Image 1 (cartoon, rainbow, N blue to C red):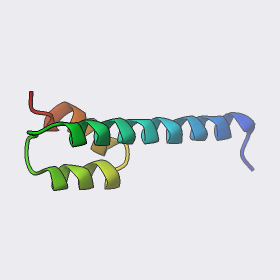
Image 2 (image 1 turned 180 degrees about the vertical axis):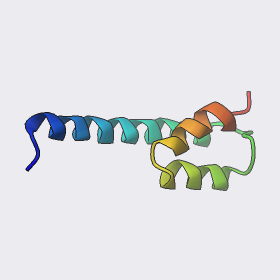
Image 3 (image 1 turned 90 degrees about the horizontal axis):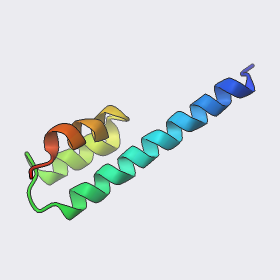
Image 4 (image 1 turned 90 degrees about the vertical axis):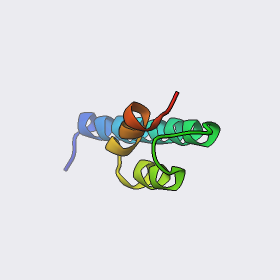
Length: 63
């Protein structure tokens, strides 16, 4: 089946994705202005896996 090393890598990647999603959603909630509508960024963050939170953190935040 799967080795212990593969399972640990999978768990690490899942935890990393959840942390990225959580941080991106916290940032989205705290910002008054973002590039584009907030509801769209929420959907991108939640439904596009790891790339969604990264895209928001790079392109969506408006300083």
